[in-house]
Structures are given as C-alpha cells and as structure tokens.
Length: 357
Image (cartoon, rainbow, N blue to C red; front, side, top):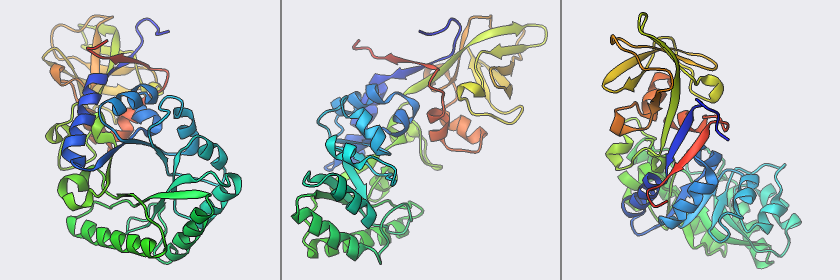
C-alpha cells in the first residue's frame, strides 16, 4: 500500500505499447523484434511491461540470467525468452525446464547444459565475438564450440536456433567489419552441420544506421522505454516517448527563503547529483536543485510564491509539463539514462496507467 505523501512513478502502458509498435515498424521492419526486459524492465515493472510488449508486436523478450527468465516464464508462457548472462552457479536444468533460450558462448556452458538437461533439446543461441568482447566466443574458440554444439544437437540435448553477437556501434565502418566477421562465423557453423534459423546482431543504433545488420531479428532495449541510448540523438528524435514519470510530493516550503523540500532522495534510488546541479519544473517556473540527500531533495524557488506542501512535482519523464528527461538527469550525473530509471528503488510505487483500463 502506498504511503501518504510518498513518491511514485507513473508508468504509461500506452506509451510503451506505442514505442514497441514503432520499433517494430521502423527498426525491425521485416525482421522479428526482441525487446529487452532485463533488470525489472529497466525498473518499470517486468510482468506488466512484458505482456504489453507482446501485445504490441514483440516476437521475443530478453532478460539477463536464468533466474529472471524462470521467474518471468509463468507470465509469458509461450513467447521466446532469451537469457544470456550465464554463470556456473546458474540452474541450467531450471532454464531448460522453463523452455528458455540460452545464450551460449563457451564449451563449459554446453557441457553443463547437456549434463543437467539431457535429451531436452534446449534452445540455444551461440554467440560469436565480433570485436566488442562482450562475452562471445573468440574466433579461436569458435570451431570447437560449433563442433561440440553440432554433436550435442544430434544427440537431442540442444537445438541451435540462433547465432548472434553484439556490435560496438563506434562507427559504421567498424560495424560493417564486425558484420562481415559474423557472416564468416555463420558460414563456419553451417559447414559444421548447424542450421540456425535466427541470426541477430543489431540493436537500435545499427538497425537505424546500418539496415543490412537487421538480419532475422533486431534487439531493442532502453529506447522503447523512451530513454535514448545515444549521445547524438534523443528518444524523441527516434520517435519514442517517455514511459516513466517520477513524481514526489512537496513536504515543506518557505516563501521567505524560497527553499522547497521534496519527499524523495537517493535512498529511494534517485541519482545523487553534485550540489547546485539540475532543476525541476513547477508550472512555468524552474526550481534549481540545491542538493539530493538520502530522503529529500532541496530545491530553490526564485518566484515570490512557492509550491505548497502536498503539491506533487515531476522529477523527469513528463514532456507535457516541461519536466526534465531521464537523459537530463543522466547528463547531470555523468552517467547514462538506463541507470537513472533502472536504479529507482523497488519500494517506490509504480502506478500503471492506461487509457484502455
């Protein structure tokens, strides 16, 4: 139950649905669309947003680890669900039983899976490193990986449904080289007897700037939550609207000093900022952020009048009010927009808003 005068986050299911549909038509185009719902859907609420994503056109979802996938599977019983950050401590048998797609990049992962889930034809996506060095198999290890995968597939332990990689997105030239390396790796896998039906390497940036990288499936993450992953373009530039609007009540104010206190702080997961950095909006007036403390934010209001205790101000995510964006907070804190929304504490109530409900 929400506490009186407690902060809360409005989560627009309509905006998220529209963002997913927009990604489907403009980024995936003729390809399938995979939506990342890792880290509790970037702090937005994984159960609720996963269902919306599927209804809006997502063909597959992705989380980081097996435990998250197993937890989400009852909510989305049929949709392909990829988990790719695997450790020796993970329950591979539970992943197989939950019919998860597992991102595989090492021989030990194949051997563990075949040992604990024999004969289950667990769906796997083999990952080749194409230059980013983000947990993919190195070129020298690829022949051994695909040879072992082909052997285990013949025995019925796994089913190699995909081959994938990550792009660095540092330049189009580098991405084209990585894409060429990827196709070479796929060719080697085919020669080894594998026949994956899903090839994927592109996320939002490459899908936008390098259409030939879309292949069979495009992965999208923070962009469909209305937060830009780029330095050179905003979410609005890409056609995406903010999904989360964080709001907090005024708990005290003083017209003489202009000091206004909001009932939220870094103990609630708000990004700590350097003193006298950033602002929030009250009507048409900007209130400068003096400090972000553990349980409150101190503002300074330059107007003769100040907001009254009980009034709710928006920290980020409501363009109609002229509020800052999550990306603004990221720039103030020298970080990325993902961190701003994902780090919001779980005890802050999420209010799921939809015009259809």
